[in-house]
Amino acid sequence: MIVTARDKGLVGCRTCSSVWPLGTEQCGRCGSKLVSRDRRSLQKVWAWWLAGVMAYVPANVFPMLETRTLFQRQDDTIIAGAIELAKYGSYGVAAIILIASVLIPLAKFFAIAYLALSVSGPARLKPGRRFIIYEVVEFIGRWSMIDVFVVAILSALVQLSVAASINPGIAALAFALSVIFTMLSAQSFDSRLIWDRIEGAEEQGSA
Image (cartoon, rainbow, N blue to C red; front, side, top):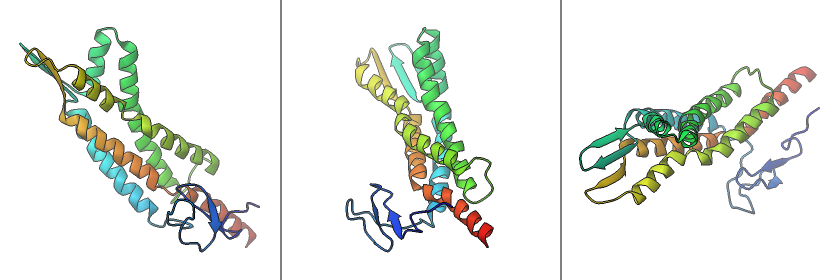
């Protein structure tokens, strides 16, 4: 039999992880509001998730980098920029940009959607494994801005007046917004909902 914090009359703080008696309204350590379950969690998850997807589309369609020289101007999307780096032999940097800017964001979208669907319907993975997925999504969220950082560094370093200049394109803003919205979507997910189905199954089994 699995004993939960609610069974023991306890509630955990989602911000600092401290534990308090059930019914305590505010965390005594960080001041956050304490709730046993956030019933609006999935609504917030899907709202931020949809906003992230909508921002991710222009982030890959419009130019991420605008390069100007005396004789020409070149606009590169995320993928085009990575291909251009690969042509010059920078395979490692190109791979990092593709992984951080394409593969990781897509994986996060699928992972968050799967977690949200799994708590409201049947799920093949056990709760422990789904919780690991949630922890991984939370951890890698901070590394998703690497492409924006590269653009910002290049824009600061390559400013040679009329000779040459590098400026961020409209996709840089869209990509940054997509990452922020995705992080908010993951943070809005109440991971405690993953374990509720176990409690429900045990109650049905003992009935």
